[in-house]
Image (cartoon, rainbow over the protein chains, first blue to last red):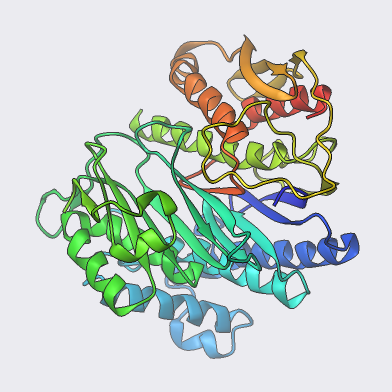
Amino acid sequence: MTDRRTATATIMGTVISVAAPGGTDPGLFATAVDAAFAGLRQADEVFSPFKPDSPVSRIRDGRLALAGLGTHPDGGRIREILAVCASLKAQSAGAFDAWAVGDPPVFDPCGAVKGWAAEQASATLSAHGLTGHALGAGGDVRVRGGSEEEPWRVGITDPHTPGQILAVAELPDGAVATSGTAERGVHIWDPRSGSPASHLVQVTVIGPSLTWADGYATAAMALGSQAYGWLTALAERTAYQALTVDHEAGIWWTPGMAGHVPALRGHPAAVGGG
Amino acid sequence: MMKVVMALVSTAVGLVLLLSFKAQSASAPRSALAGADPGVPSTAVTGPSTAVTGPSSPSRPHAKKRPKGSARPAGRTGTFTGNPISTPYGTMQVAAVISNGTLTDIKLLQETDGGHSHRIDDAAIPVLKSAALAAHSAKIDIVSGATYTSQGYAQSLQSALDKAGI
């Protein structure tokens, strides 16, 4: 896809970008992008833990009771995020816990909000007729409307060679989420074991929805050394495939990942890691 | 310090994202960058544009052919100086070295100075530079990875690329 329209904005403290084929009607593109960016700004107002009077800040401080969400103007989307957080906590056996972030532990759904909000933004683009697009939200990516012959090409960063691309995923439609420390040798402390949990430095998850791809990638980082078994089971029961990089630059991936990343084909599905 | 370094490493990826779009943009005005103040939402919409590709791409097995009728614009050659950009840590200014329409090098003309921030830049600048160069040659649509933005570096480079018309 060489000809294209692009738009960028800084929302939620990060760069949001939209690209669409160059033949797209300019009025349609502008209208769709405006609607998607407006939705992201609204989500930021509701979910930012840095804005003292955002609903999330008020939930954290006990000023907004969950029982009161039924009549709250943002109640619907807040409950959606709470449901995503609850599901991720259950699926990760507590490794991802939006109700225990930081020290002292407080409610902070940030780990789930960006992927969810970007997924909503991509849906908004489609609803406004922009059915073919690539949306980037701070490194999480949602693409739609490509084809097998001309898929979107999504670069996955190499955490050991900053600025370089580790692999390129090709997909007509789907989500690519990457979570990581972006810093060699950093260990994630696992409060459950009281020891450094992870030699993972980056997890990329590819699947249909950015909400879940982002959540699963974040949860896998938190799971540390248990991530391999967890991601394998996830790939067997869902459409979400994973590619991980460890602190020695070992690469590991679930078998289905080769369907998205041509460079992996013909290699055994575990190099290092696991 | 660790958090700072991590943020700056992430910055490079944000730059890749920005430049990967800029790389597709032949004649767009200063469009690929968001506002200088991260707290101020900004929107830039550009029209259709034609990709500028490098003169050689023999080692790209997945490179797609350009669509018919998509003429490659004549590449420019030269060194294009970006605008000096003020940051909370000082002024950042780069120059883009363009060869036949392809970004081949980035020269640092001014970097932020003084104490702690200077040490941060020492580590960050090679990272930002390699990010920009990689994005320009990788033939990718978009990047997945942890991101942030380094407004000063990215904006100065953006203005240099705009002057170069790529």
